Length: 72
Image (cartoon, rainbow, N blue to C red; front, side):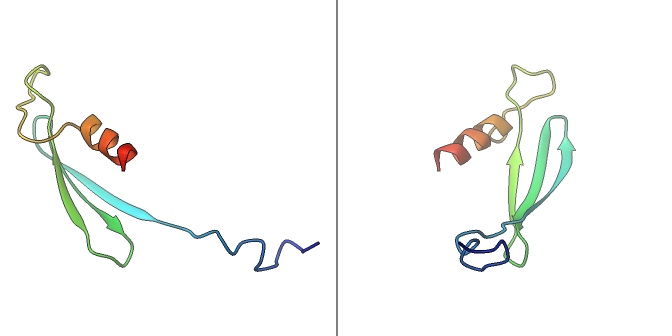
């Protein structure tokens, strides 16, 4: 039996922190700069399609990014 402070109990755990900052570009179009602390940051653009008032379909929708992330 190990006590709670034992490194063996937590040897497979790690903390992952992802930072993201979103900015509205125009209408539904948004830019997000995101990445893990200490690593490179990546820029993502999203937009809604023309089915949404103000959407222009210039980039993938937020739901598209979410679905792709789940698939990965």
